[in-house]
Amino acid sequence: MRGLRAAVCTLAVLAALAACTNATEDPTGTSPTPTATASGSATPSPTASPSEAPVNENLSTIAHVKGTEIKVSDTPGGPATMTLKAEDVLTVPDQTPLVLLAKTVQADGIEVYLPIRPNGSTGWVDPGDVTLYTTVLSMDIYLTDHQLTLSDDGEVVATYHIGTGRDELPTPGGVYFIRELLAPPNPQGVYGPYAYGLSGYSPVLDDFNGGDAVIGIHGTNDPSSIGKDVSHGCVRMNNADITALVDEWQLPLGLPVHIHE
Image: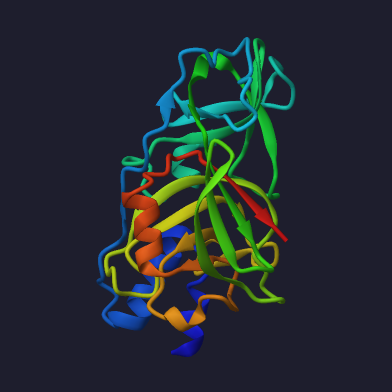
């Protein structure tokens, strides 16, 4: 049982949530799946057009895909080299928009971070295929200090203690974004009341129970694990803290998340 509870710390997002719930709470395998939760309030920018990047260094641009898939190129305006589909990267694609974090905004294309392997992958999308929004909120995760900070226009406005991945199953450093917000069926379970799925993946686990080993930020039913290296790569928070992120701060999908090793 201990091993099963540890294993769920890596979000494979739907597979892990469903598998853990079934294994630890419902041996019949009929427990409900998590539901997508509306996340945040990224504000439409009156100036963030493809021809001009934000002048505020604390301003991040979020690209909402117009539809459920988007063609991605290796160069701005170049031929498509892949098609990113909501059904491939979201747990509940019919309830969650396909949202990407922009790295570079140009008139001939928008470079975005992609929620695919390897971590840190980017590609270029057509400006006409997305709607741009902006946010001055950002998140930083400091693995050594076991701290998560939320900043508003460059000023730290909230700090939370967290649990992180073990040495052999690390939480990967890098630049990521929130791809989705889920409400697990049991708010008192191993994931707590909420789980954010990030755009990154475990660097050592290829899959978990048939799904990709997606890194997430979620609550916990084991508060004693906060402040320690205990997970399979996910970031654990006290339930009250992750609830504050969801209810008080209403973090937008696409929010930049910087994980510092």
